[in-house]
Image 1 (cartoon, rainbow, N blue to C red):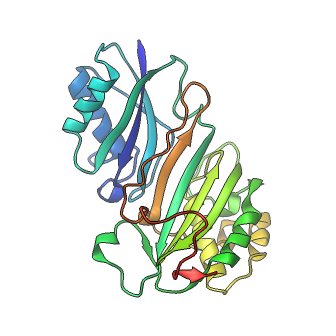
Image 2 (cartoon, one colour; image 1 turned 60 degrees about the horizontal axis):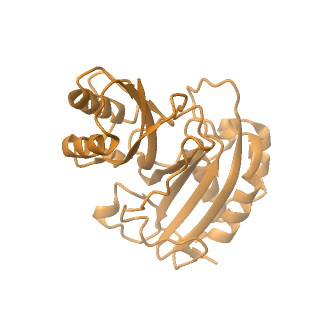
Length: 274
């Protein structure tokens, strides 16, 4: 039995999230049906993690098992021939039998994008959060640094979650601006439900000078979701890459989305205060 790993990219706008739901279009259902049509047998895929409705991915990782002898490159071509326009297979390869897309992930990187233009282009409405206000990037960056490290992130966990522990570790957290866009780039060991969006929703008041950076420390310590900010909308969030060890090295995804193409870490543009 072969174990195959595939890296997916998708526009989450028309999907009701990753996980299979009856009578609803999801990424998992679309992928599994496509694989079953090609391979001729039932397929169940394992993903690095779930994405919510409207959330995008540049580097979602899945794995599944098959007895088919179709080469990985052939499967890659076949998938892209049958996938809808809002879903692509970027890479496919055979991996060791013990590779598991979820349990062996060492880190995940997400990017959240806010556009501060006075008037948002209709072509970007599905890919960014629109906030026509000047944001203090330096203050938000100071608050973001307080979240780095290992903490109990209960204050930033969405309701309805069922997890063994709410402790997670954030390895890197950068906030930068270019043009009218502000980018929140966060890499961690794993994330609770809505955690990234709740963090962004909490940092926005800091950027608007309605809250001090140190207030984020207080909110984190309280472990109370009601004390944090609102959940930022899904369309600004991207799962960019997933990192593994020797059995499945990470792949840096090409940021093909129009809202990501012109952002470079370290640059501060007119979208926020320096």
